[in-house]
Every structure is written in structure tokens, then in C-alpha cells.
Amino acid sequence: MSGQRPGILVPKSQKGQSSFINLREETIGYLASAAGEFGLSAHTIAAYRYDLEQAAIFFSRAGISSWAKVSSRDVVNFLGSSHKDLSGATLARRLASLRGFYRYWISEHEEQPKDPTRFPGKTRIWNRLPQILSPKEALGLMRVPQGGGWKALRDRAMLSLLYGAGLRASECCDLEMDNLALQSSGRSPGLLRVSGKGEKERLVPFGGKARSHLEEWIQNGRKQLTPRGTWVLLSKSGSRLDRTTVFRLVRDFAVRAGINRKVHPHILRHSCATHLLAGGGDLRSVQEFLGHSDLRTTERYTHVEIDELRSLHKLHHPRG
Image (cartoon, rainbow, N blue to C red; front, top):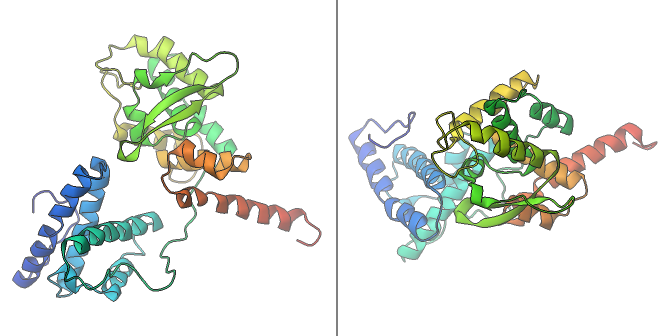
């Protein structure tokens, strides 16, 4: 069917196809509302649409033709059916997609008896620590792009924004020249005005070596190209650098840095947050720095600190 990602297998039976179509059509209003009223990004809407399509396929195969007939057990079975193939973060997002949809659905349908995504007690399907780099690995990764050509200068600036400022890949690509305030005096860090999820803006302090890399790119590298816009990071053609290229570059640089595991831009963001907390940053400040709307999201990173403290205690304390 058109508009579906590869891998979506619609039920083969006519009854299953009909149930799937009914379930999918009932999500259209929610997705339009989420995009228009809640201001969610296109990437988020696409992820929610895909999650709800996967749920619709699973439920239609189970003979369920309406969201009103889905039970908590059905939701658990859906999440459990793919827990071996998906990361904890993806499973958590799938549950969040269903919960967001049912909040909308219940407000529109008085006959819906209860929300099947609200389980009794404090059920948590996910308690997975974010994968991070050590400070040594992160700094080693930053040193991989060498030379004074425009590409090396840009790539050092890109890595500096991902790790030094904790930006998401999309935030890094969308950053514009007007978003920079680097003309601070003395040793005070400059500021980045970042537009994050839901078009929420935040100010991010940006100094040290990372700032130097960005300034070097702007003064010496960016001028070697013909900019076709006001974006900070550019492709060879002068257009906006895209997320796909950022992911590819980070992956390739990690291999060249000798990091023997899969690395993507968000791992640099995770690493930035964890290293800030390990260095004494308080939870609220790091929350503002990263642009998290919920403090519980930031609290994930404190678990990494606790694990490190336990290891130190076991190795060095007499009673360890």
C-alpha cells in the first residue's frame, strides 16, 4: 500500500485487510491533530504513524477490527511480539504512540470504557541504560577529521556540536548563522539558540575547544563554499547538511577512531549528558541544556553514574 515503510505486511485475508484499513483510518484524525495542534515535528509524526500501523497489523491479525476492542493484554502481546528485535527505546516509543493515540481517542469517543495502555501498578517495559562513549573515546572521535580543508573543518565543527553542545542530528542540521552568539568577552562561552522538538527553543552555552572548531569552520571553511542558505553546516554544493550524511559521517569516524561498536549521533548526545552529570552538573541544569521537557528523561543518565560508583567501590573499597 502507498505511504508504508518497507517491512509492513498487511494481513492477506480479506477480513484481516478490512480490519487493518478500519484501524488505520481511525488514526488519521489523531495524527492530523498531533501535527497541527501539538506542533510535533514531521519526524515524530512519521514515527507515530509507523508505530500505529504496526499495531493495526498485529491487532487485525488477532481478529480485532476496532481500537475500542483492544485490551491491555492485547497491548502487552503486541509489545512482547517484537521485544527481541527492537531496542528498549523503540518499544518505549511504541507504547508512547499508543498512549498518545488513546488519549485522543477517548476524548472523541464516550463509549470507550478505559485506556488499554494504562496498566495496573507501575509496570515498566523499559529500564535500559543509554549507550555512551567514554570521555577518551569521545575525544578520540573528535580528533579523527584532520587537515585544513573545508570538509575537515566542517566535520570537526559538526562533531563539536553533537558532543560539545549535545545537539540532536536534526538540530545540528537546522542550526542557522543567526542562531549563533559567539562574540562573548573573556572566557565566557558563547550561546546557541536551538529549536528542538515541538519547535521549543533553548539557549545552549558553547565554549572551549568545541567553540574553537565551530569558529574555525565559519571563518575559514564555510567561506570556501557558496552557501545557498543561512545554515551553519553545509554540503559540498552549499546546501543544508542532511541528517543521513551526519549519521554516515559519525559512523565512519567511529570506525576510524577504533570504536568497536555501532555509533550514531544520538550516542554523542547521551555521552554529553552523562559526562556533564559525572562532572558535577545538576539534573535541572542538564535538563535545560538538553531541552528535555520531562525531568525523568534526564534522570536516565544518573543510572550510569551510579553504575560507575558501584564499580569504583567494588574495586577500591576495603569492604567492596
